[in-house]
Image (tube, rainbow, N blue to C red; front, side, top):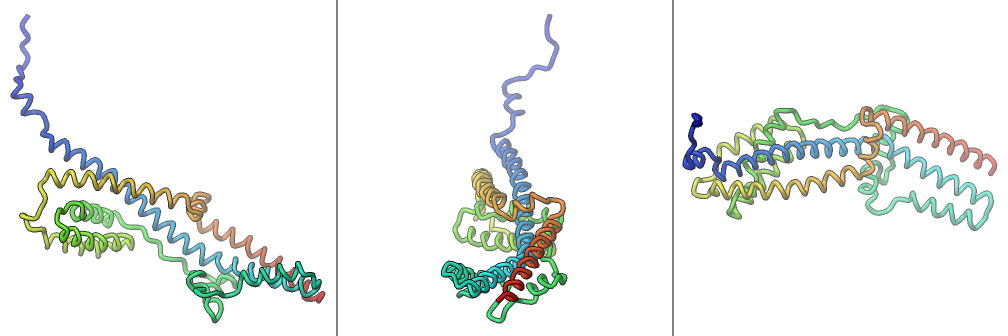
Length: 276
């Protein structure tokens, strides 16, 4: 019995098959979308870790510092009372640990200088409110603008060194605006890029552009994986994992324990001084 279906010739099959460039375009689009989502997740996490790190220093840094000073004073009081060489050595070591050293402002992240504690540190020791660092959470529009600019202006899409440098400088401004969540600036940067296209004679061919994009996507993914692993392995990220829904509450809990330790040490020091 004869088959009455449609006859497809080899020529027709060839015309229906996607061009190699079309398959490459599909692969690039899929890789771009996956990388963009991963990049946004890593960048958002990085901003969250940095903000939490600053808040950690604000709330706990002065308390740890106070404990170290009390430990030094306790060791000195014990050494003065006993006169034991070992107690004297311990007191000297404890005092040396808290003595100012060159670059103290950088080492203590701006908590104190030669004149003592800054107001933020004093506020924490006296239970006064300290304004937390600004939370940076890019809006959906900012993310969209960032994605579009990253796709259009990345340096790896250019062949000439001069154009690559121009793109690198532009992308650095895009990255800085996105890190601040500055939607208005990202919009201006998008307008700036649209107003200054690369001359047609200097543009790479479509195929070269696609291959360059795939190569960059692969390299970028490897770099982001390293950045994400470094962030996740850090102490601050570990603290965030302990209380993902209420990290500020975790800091308050730790601060409460540190204040209890301070009170205990102050009581011990007072007793030693009274005996002396």
